[in-house]
Length: 458
Image (cartoon, rainbow, N blue to C red; front, side, top):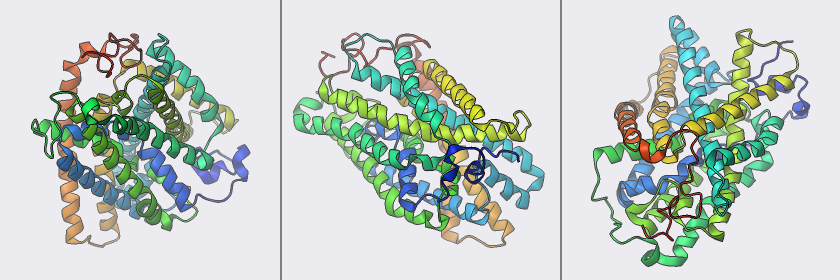
């Protein structure tokens, strides 16, 4: 029998040692996976994104983007409910186009596969970078360069990634991930609250309802950060596929996941902005000085990113193996060997990407302005409209207005946001340094490497 690397059900029928797992994931575990996927790197940059807008406008934008994302998540669920046999995003596109636009089937599949897997791979590079930065922040008294720290992080990832082949493997790790996420953001916020704005907010830093320096550029840039932080559509089909009852997805999302997301994103964004003003930096752990609190937050960051990396890596590696098998590039032999080779290849490539693009907040914005509008937002809306045509039903006027607004927002982020973020990176390239340099910024306890830390005169 041929192996199906992308399907949880097929994976359980082969020689996989985890084949005894026959029950799907509960609504609560599904919510935990959604939180682990979404409340990741994006929440760390909330403070800086809100600082560009002001506390009132920032809150409005967060709620608006959350509502937009929630609507699109439900659109994916509606389409998947019509094609429950689809186990990946690519298969969902294939089955929808096969009914509605068969002449565009191959092109649509290629676009979605390339877009989805490129995005997931780029986020793995971002997580690898974050793990290396977290280790560097923890061992700030040791002058170890970022490339070596990220390599140590990859060695920590390896046993976790090799042993897990489907998302249900993370039942115990989800609670650990949520605890680490809470520690990563609450420890810096608690430190800032304990010291008060007189000490934490620099002289001349403003705290306003609407930022005095607000511009269209800062509005779009913050929207790109929010879009990256909130979007979970890239692996949503894979998560829903492993549910015991997919009809419980709205409960998992609206009752459990969305309230947690809203509290986390708004709480972190407003707290960092209140205590730091518009001096908020790109990552929340950078807001506090070196010391024990910073170390605790850094190790929580590492734990959080380890689990989040493995969750997305499982989806990417399974999908790639399935694509290779579909194209007759691999056989149906030893599936564990194929899995191990794929995990090693993806991990090594993510380490390489982390060295080529070693900047956190701008990489978040680039991903938020390119892949998120096209694959996470516009593709599900297009699939839903195709489904409406096939099933001969008409969405309500209110929903069509919402879709039109969401498409317009996506187009602005894609066109203006991508150009703006590209110009910003180009202008700051000299300050970032070249690939594979030491990149000690905010990692070493010296004012030369970490001038923005509170202990330094700057």
